Length: 157
Image 1 (tube, rainbow, N blue to C red):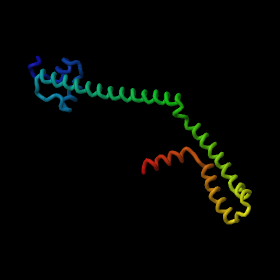
Image 2 (cartoon, rainbow, N blue to C red; image 1 turned 180 degrees about the horizontal axis):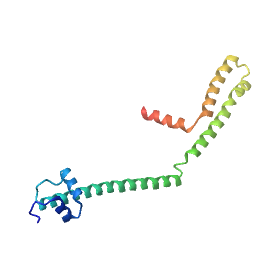
Image 3 (cartoon, rainbow, N blue to C red; image 1 turned 135 degrees about the vertical axis):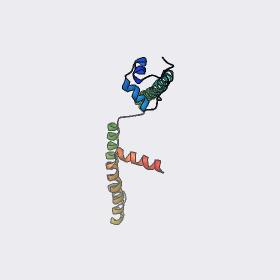
Image 4 (tube, rainbow, N blue to C red; image 1 turned 180 degrees about the vertical axis):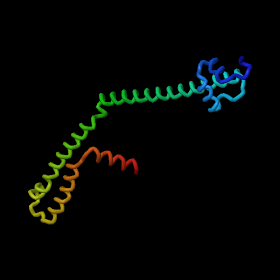
């Protein structure tokens, strides 16, 4: 039987698939028309091996990706335990608190200058006030986004 030319139905029955599946294999060029059953069987088995290898390769890639994600998760947990990482919300709170504290310190500069050097001119006082106000406003407005933007700019340079 394998040394004869088989019909699609005969081959389908031999390998346990449907006749339309055999027709599809022929359309895709896996099975050549007017070939012996042996030729079709070898071609069909080769196609099954190719498909299995492809699936196995995709499965291996998926497993590798999952393993990598697990490694990252474990590394992140370890970093949090070692206090090398902190939640974004907490970092934002710290930045806001430091900004408020810095703004408070900066607000005291001009009055301290006037007390220490009463002879300071209005023009000098205004110049210092302008610089202090600018620094105070920057400190008060500091956010995590500013830090990320600064890192991106540094990376670009």
